Image (cartoon, rainbow, N blue to C red; front, side, top):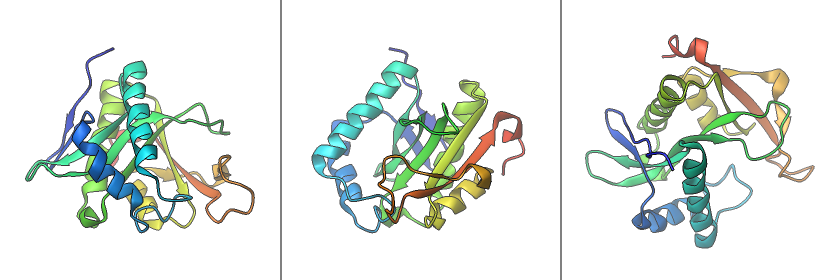
Length: 187
């Protein structure tokens, strides 16, 4: 296994997952407001399995989803990271960027700040050609983060998420992308 890449931004540390992250991450994933654009909140067991998958992705690929921690007080506030898309999609194979923050940390620019650090890693350290992001059509907060980090909506590539049943309210997803060549121009 390659050494885990740890990232820092002005206010945040993107770091390896610790055993102590399970409880605050489980609380985040049980919050109906945080999870409103997911099919359902996740159980503690689901969250533990997710952390194992995050660690496994790092072990296999050398990058993945980091635990997100504030530098000023050491609080775990969520996750941000990049990973291979885990389902077949017309835009794949692809590497996606994703994030989720506990509600108490919304509206402070943390998602954009962490996402920029992850994109810097993707393009400058890993040499990826592009990164995608996607979310349910109604998830305007995440779409605003995608726009803030310089991603462009690709409306012709919007899609129905294959893991959601036809007719599910969250099935339709928007696709955003950012190419390495456009990274320097990103805000």
